[in-house]
Image (cartoon, rainbow, N blue to C red):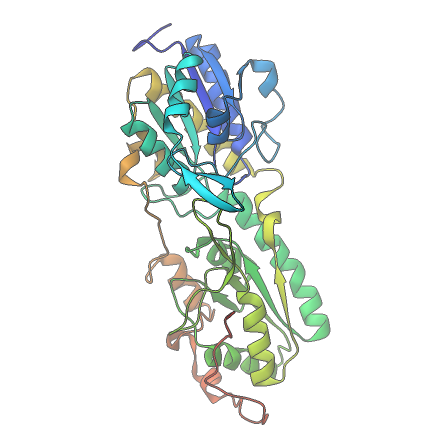
Length: 394
């Protein structure tokens, strides 16, 4: 069956890896072949495959038995932006526009459309290609759940489950050694992952970028728990969390990436400041890339399959330039240019924030310092400074 002149489509996975990517690849390939008789071309390593002309025709056997596998069989790359491709030259990184090469390779492979799977950076790249005449349909992917216009992205549920499991395990060592344990989670500039994992594991304190924290409020909660028989505290900290009046903590800059800023270090700073202010032994843990890996949850497999099916349906209906989304329990779509360059953050009045506050979770702000916390005295130790803030790298 041929509609709108579509006979051959390409599929790529951009950005970082994510649980559920293989479910989407499988859904695109099998829907395209079985339902519409299309040829499906797998583009390797995201936009890098388009830039370097690395592609191959896929068949159903290639995507068999990958539904439960993490990662992506096509590979991924979060540094290949066609509009601003990084090249090492004369001892430094420089950038150039390689859009013409991408278009040439697109045409050489006789592609009629692209299904692009990725997050905000990938969709910004897709929007750039759309403006240059390519036919693109997007599928939202990110463990951070920070894409606007969709209630949830595939991969987030698995990452939240993985992070919650890690926080659960930290409880036992924290209680055994009577320590404050600060666990740093991914999420970049949005706190969805730390919020959901923290609530799921019953974290005592949750720090997210949308609610700047005061270290004295966090320290007071730790002391309050210690004085009332809970001799340990679990803190879930999103990597983008920062102190009121301060800034996000940057681990390093990667100039080869379109988004060079790499966050990291908030857990170490918070743990250090709590120990200095209270005398309570504190440790920090960076959960890191383990949140990206592993077998996707049933939810992410189902969601990925549904999104993939609808993406191919959009292609065959000639509805290019759209992103498949999940809203109100239904699959829908929105223009890619409506979300390109935007992120979805946690509203201060989000129902999950309200629920967490209602069960006593501290967010490090004035609203989460209850009567017992205010009564807690943290000035008994002469080393304490109740108004200190986390130190930031020079």
